[in-house]
Image (cartoon, rainbow, N blue to C red; front, side, top):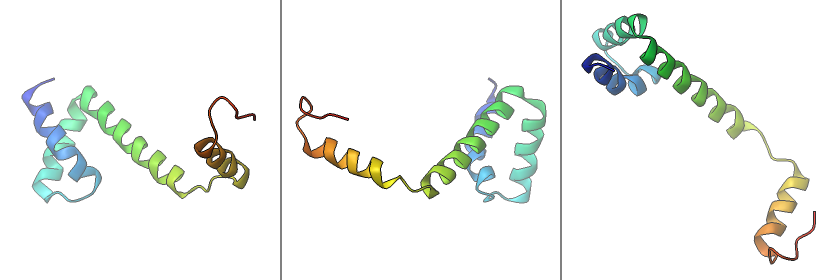
Length: 81
């Protein structure tokens, strides 16, 4: 990891959020094109955001909700599935 990687890390969230200036975007893209480590980090962050968006939108099945509620109110030694 280089000093350029540190700067890219500072820009990464803004890059993902599309909040950077044109010059910052160009700087981040130049570095991502040249650095495998930062490119992998970018891909991880991008897929993590996709996962969070997807899972936050999915509803939990009612049966699972009831089981979780039971776990919160039941003595751990007496719960049966």
